[in-house]
Length: 93
Image (cartoon, rainbow, N blue to C red; front, side, top):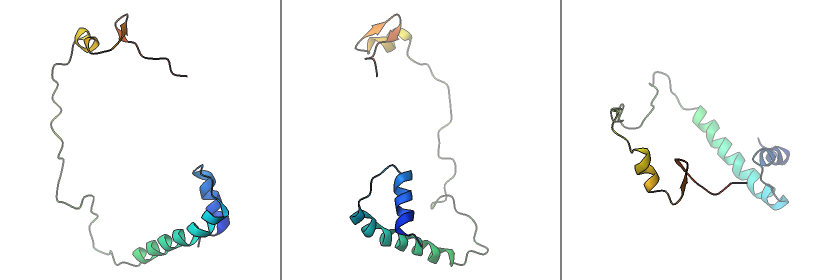
């Protein structure tokens, strides 16, 4: 069971500020979610194979085939600004 103090700690870990009203509102909601997980723990899973995907799929990715890429000149032709062979972007502070 999650208490108000536990919820404050979770909020601190998530770097979110919770008002007293939020703590009162979300403590029972979080406890109901955890209660549901305890119900799932009671489900009989003996002999059930692990399922990694709900559909019977395996490796739906394309083959990794090398292809020609843009030349440096072609890539720089699309950049708004370039300098010394690189894309020039605004400085980030």
